[in-house]
Length: 184
Image (cartoon, rainbow, N blue to C red):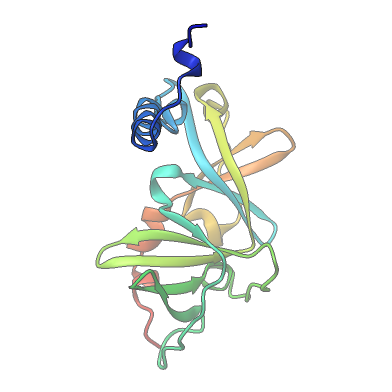
């Protein structure tokens, strides 16, 4: 009785070589990397009652609340600095910065890590709501931001389902003079 190629016993080396060949042939995340013309993708999040979304390219990482070290002489919205994989990241309470009201830490609270000139900054938000996609047609029907505290960072608001999403510009936030002036 002959043994078919599928029934042959392979050596450990052949098995590992086969795993490597198959893993190299598999490209993880490929469908997400394909650009879809007319489709804008972002990370949805909540700050108080505000549903916001920022471009995927503006959010580098999403973290649970890391351990903080207080930094004396800073604005009240500056929570401190955290060591994130060997890098110091300044942490800002986004709601406190924009509205003047502190965020309440809950199990849903997250930190969005954003690059800025000179390093990264973490923004404490109330909840991450996942990826959101908006078509050009939806964006053509955009409304202006009514809340003047958010208007500098939210260029437009777009209706998706039952929620009105504010298109939040992380780059406008980190470039603003008020944000860059964290010392008290």
